[in-house]
Length: 497
Image (cartoon, rainbow, N blue to C red; front, top):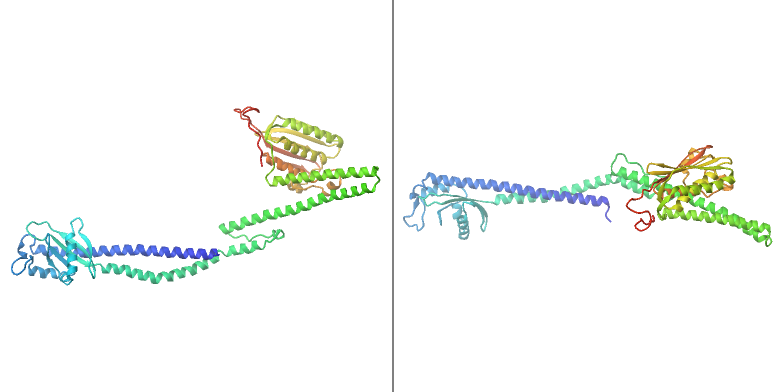
């Protein structure tokens, strides 16, 4: 397969050759037209000179210059006048309305066939077309005629002619020069173009070498050298570096995700195996066996929750995060979540409040929105010490509605805030895996997907030891007044994939 370098070089050579050919044709056309014009002026000068000789001899005022006596069967000019016209070089014919009265020496030297062809062309000249060309057996002539209207004399036309061989020689000379020089110029241009193209594409070869070195996810930390300037290669390097950075982030996330998922599944599987072995070794219907089976059931439920969360995130990554959209009033939904939070907080000795609550309706999936709100409330209760507070609020701001969850819990360090919504992330990993507050670290990641799927966003503000505030913003739903709420003609719920 031809390389870009060879293709560019060939294209450049072809373009140069075509340009040279077009220039040569244009130059040949212009020079030939100029030479033909010059030849026409010379022949016209000879025609005017012959006409002047005839005028001075009195051709137009007296027929005595025409000799019709003696042995001549056809009229012709008198010898003195013929001698004067013989001094004009080239081909010259003086004729009346139907025949020649004089032919120069050059005409008389032609063959009989050529003389007939020439005289026929002379007689075909008209005042509208006084210029013509005629091809003889050995030459090609340019004719220029002049016509007279005197009634006394027989002379009606004076025609001079010259060979156009000099004009044709210009074309052949130029063609020879083009054939001689063009290959040398094209060969030189190919060499220069090949060198310039190789130098221009050298950074591309370097980029290819650098990219080829990125054979696996472990070498994605490498970056391409940034080319100076703002040309196409510099932008290509910057674009590839940005792509490699995204790939590095994706590979790192994939490795971290795999390691965390393996760890999260390994722990409950180990506990489940130990519980089953303990239940099997205990006596039938013994208390120890029942306790082991209950612990196994809890670990099974925890694993089921983990698998369900992983399945939800996998569907979201594939763009199959299903939403059953319909108008949803948020106040009843928040009150329901607040009631659940009060039940959870009562056991943990927390005070839960839900105020202020402003009426707001969004277009979304009620089950997913409840899951989003409940995840935030559960996290707030889970990471707030006994005697603390959890406050819920629902406030309209312009065309958005904000649901906020504030707690007085442990808080999150500033260095950890950028990773809050990462999968399997937890601020205190050692404690969260062993204490009763343990979780799988996927709730906030799922919450972020739900918020984005509803066209909204989720943010967090926190200070270590002073609690956290999670805020969800979702666009308000403005119903079309032309459509009834529900029933026939109402918009059908859609699904977003």
